[in-house]
Image (cartoon, rainbow, N blue to C red):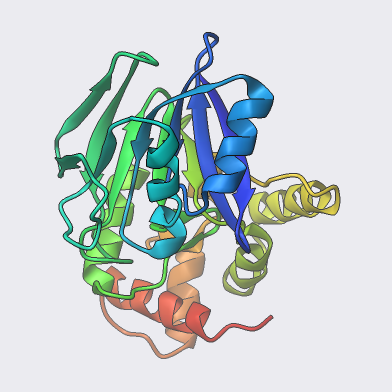
Length: 254
């Protein structure tokens, strides 16, 4: 399976997964135009659309795509997503014949209450739940929900390729540096991202193992993050530490 990030809108990635026969899956198409252009340029046939949550920058292009391609649309059980043909929830399995693929559906509430992720074929299609060195804002869920969701994603195989839906990596790295300034893996990843972005290359996908080593939102139990929390007057459990991280990221401008 070939994994291709398509830049879209301001900073989104629409993910295209295709096999050697040119049969393609498209994930979270917020805009139809880059998808149609990629299908034509690469000689691909759209076979399935996967959606992670209801935000317009993730579903805004679906209707235009369906006008040209008669394909199934898998989405969470959320009435705000009116274009779905197949509703899926936690523990469901999406099995596709063309291209041949199998994805486990994981409920990941936090960014929204009905957000889901798809895990399979060596990739994690996580929408706006997990970002490289970051995580999504809590628009509908609670810190406890989001931390539990991230814990579930963090438990996937370390070689899983994380396919996030936004190019936020450089900004996330700057925030992560304020949490763990002595993290050598983080410094190396930051340099890698700077080099990629200098040539307008995507910083994604990224192995989950790299996120374990660099992402403060997956490292709430590490000594450096605990020490940061204590310096900021946060006493309590890991949920409190996570909530403090997210609150500080919400106002970070570095």
